[in-house]
Image (cartoon, rainbow, N blue to C red):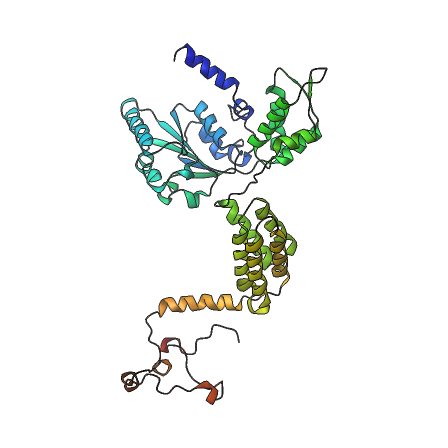
Length: 416
């Protein structure tokens, strides 16, 4: 590294975002996640003993996944190599694995490979890690915001411990903000209050990075007073946040969790909860037609014959959303959700069809009874197609006639 490189690195560190400059370097400074790195916890002991297993950190943004990996990097005697799944591929990975193998072979030194956003790697990329993880050539640490059950290949997942990081609490964020105010702006006098710190913590939605970025932007955008103080208030904090995003991923864990909560709230006749979960999806920008399609499904799965008009409401909701789009269609969705939540419920048809699907799987090749077959040709008639069929209008509608294959004779799917 020459003088220019040294100066560049110095400038980058000096101008790095507050969240990076204040990233904890030790477990003592790490805030939150006591369930996995608190005193006496298994992972903490493994880190302190430098006996790290291959593992996946799964948690929401700003919960400390990358920070925890960097703390391990500081504490381990192994060579620590970091990759981002966003901008690296198989070629780079293979080079790292080759060097790690030589390092283990000739120097008996371990390599820890940290892959941030590992869910962004495809199956082939993840599979390429398997032999070296299994042999212990590398110790893998993966970080992901997505459910590893869906996003990490099963063979790799089975060789890793999964540690779930929870969203930081407001109390956790208050500690982080206080630390930032204490050491993050050494040349500034900042005037704030406990209430303002709590306000920022509440708006950050458990994301330390969001809280610190908003704090830094607020401080930098304010002109010091005549006394040389930076005076913060709620309006400034609110404007600095100006988040157009919510903790919601249309293709990820939150998407499926919230639509599940909406469906179950409708099923449970709780219109208020159903409206809330609907609002979470609408305000996060979920496709209104996706929501309307799910409501159509709810209308037949959970309400069904108890209120057939529910399906009419749901289909009309879909059409209305198609005509109007956002933002006008939000009330259409809300009205439909309330109607479905308040409607009487019946799962008779839903359950009956579930039984039908099972029987169909087991009797797909079962022949249609001869008397139910059509006989448009003389040959078919000679083969007794349609023979013995009783035309229902000419008989008592309850005429004892079998309509199912022989193996399913007398089978009942519906209660009545």
